[in-house]
Image (cartoon, rainbow, N blue to C red):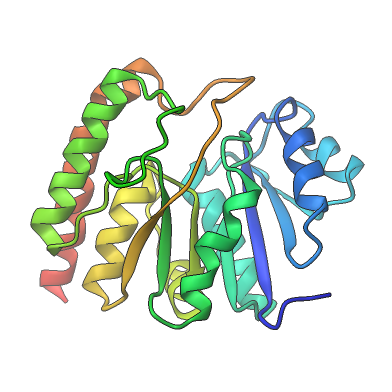
Length: 238
């Protein structure tokens, strides 16, 4: 039976052919949600895997990065009049069993965006091991977001999040390109949207490479700082 709200799972994927099968099998067992794979110009069999499991898939002609892939999903959801979207990364780290925890507060009308967090103090995911430099970058972006908005989010790099129609319609028009998670929260706050986080469990990546390489983890704080500055300056100019 379909849920009363039209809910779409957006699955951005770049070279995730080895991780997609288990994720898509799990999602297929939750019939109340629609889902679409956004193949970000993969060089492996990501597109073929999506077709093999009978999931609709948009195959991008050029690699747009995580921000461009997710925004493609937002545009798809707007055009097809979905009520709620949930980003579920194609690397298999996001547990579909936690999706309900993300969408329930939105259905209740209390918030526009929910972030699934591994690090909420009262209920942390102790089984998830975060590389040291990535954790440092995340703490930096959490502090920066707090100083800019007064809202503390413990897991600013989490892409496991749900948004209502006004929020994802807003992002369908403008969305950060590289490592968009923290910047997008600042954009939401500056535009009057409400967001919060809920505790979730995540899995370790089994195959393939994370976007957060050692070098990217080192550069991440600088990129976040530049991204935040750009958003604040654009808003001031307007």
